[in-house]
Length: 242
Image (cartoon, rainbow, N blue to C red; front, side, top):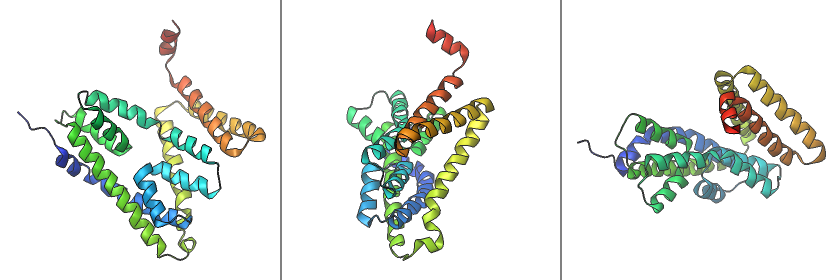
């Protein structure tokens, strides 16, 4: 009978994920410092928010003095997928306690979720304790990496000279390219073009009567809805109507 994987096994399994977090976390710390955040503010963001893309978005929106309500809603929408990932975890670990489930869902990331699904698919005897180990290792690495990046950023008097202030823009360009590449590979070109055109058109029209922040949110929601409807097979839509 094979042994069940425990907390320490989970921490070891998370080492590859943690190595990836080091560079991204350090980049966030440097960018945040360049935007005027202090070392303790960077630490608090990583400890209490703990959302890689959400943290980048937050400092970018705060830099242009976006309303707190818009920032909050944007981060909520960007990270809404975590609800679905947590629901998947309840199917893999159906008998864990409420306390364990809350802790697991709170610290779960895209990377730890992917590792969990991969190990489960290969019938590895993972346990809730193993998953907690994966999450804790990733969490601690992210916090330390962002603090280290912020500390290094404090030593750079003019980060603009090194192009560090462009790291935020570069990250979002990279995310956009990867997203479009994934869409083209997995969806019909007509769907991709329709979603992109609709989103841009809605953003332009809504932006005439409201702020750019609200326009982005409305355009994103409607664009996502259009994409979801067009991606749903006709047979599925017909069955739902019946």
